[in-house]
Length: 185
Image 1 (cartoon, helix red, strand yellow):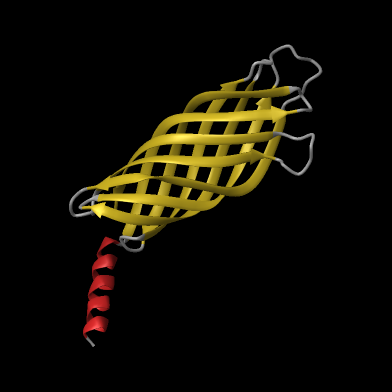
Image 2: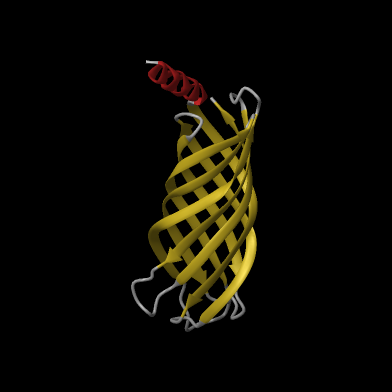
């Protein structure tokens, strides 16, 4: 009976962290892109922006929906590559001290990649590829002592984009290191 009571107290205290949240973030994006049909293979860096909405069920689990704009990167052959992702993720949290948690995100994202040819390239056309693929992220977050108002998060996320179904299509790998801030409600 004592074990059941202890388990009940743990679950009840864990649910005190339940609630929705919204975060905005920005940071560094890096990626590599290749498309044999227009002759590019390059990597670059840029600025990424993200909007995340989520619901934390208890101090250990949450679910999130996100939109990330990876900005654009110039490629050596000229032109640029732009990428966007919208996805959902399950989040596992491990509290390490009061208000500080490590987390891991695993989900699926629909990634849209646009490759624009260099100006004046009459034989090349703009290529757009869309792909739904798994993504993952890790990081840590800090909340206020009562875990009820603000959230600050540092995260790294890895995405795949483009169409991997054939040898003559766009392949893009994207990563983002983001600093996000948000509120719980």
